[in-house]
Length: 288
Image (cartoon, rainbow, N blue to C red; front, side):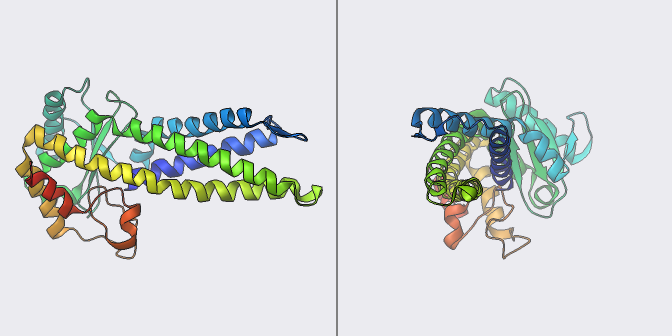
């Protein structure tokens, strides 16, 4: 979940920065005294929406390493960390990836792993110390296969394209409404009203769009589970998920949007979770 939140947050910040800069430079060519040029507005919305999303994707590895203090490991290292890197190397070759992903370990009591990166050649697989301490080697290997499947499936690129579309519609609708609102107030306040309404609505529409991105994210988890089953077998993957189901406890039980990448969520926050219930994933694997 954290990698998705980091991606969305970076994407939102980049889009907001682009808006502030272009507004300050007077580059709002899509609206004038005669009204809105909807064609120009749509073009600019698409540019802003996709630029922000792809910048976020390009920076994803750097941000993940920095935010989570990931230590990169090599297949030549001794011990369990080196074994993780060797397993990733073997699985990447088995999956037909053009390059072996970077492999990193980060300190956390949570049992988690994730993959990120803009392309199959520039990807990262990171594993928590908590996962390595609580899973046997065959289950760790299954989790690594799951992350390799994400890279093989191009999930981050697909998420970026989806987020770009959502960004574009959020920007377009927010600006139309903000422009209308700025034209019903005193001219001295129109600039402030436009800015505040636009930013507020972009935040709102982006949040609403997250229900769509999270639904896609949940669907891709089933595909990654299936990909892992193809690489190492369905039984080890189901066993790893069952270990998570039995042992996982979020560090902050009040945090519905928990930092889990392969964890579970219940209730209302299920719609905002990047992962489906573990029971559903286990059942899907057992039905193969």
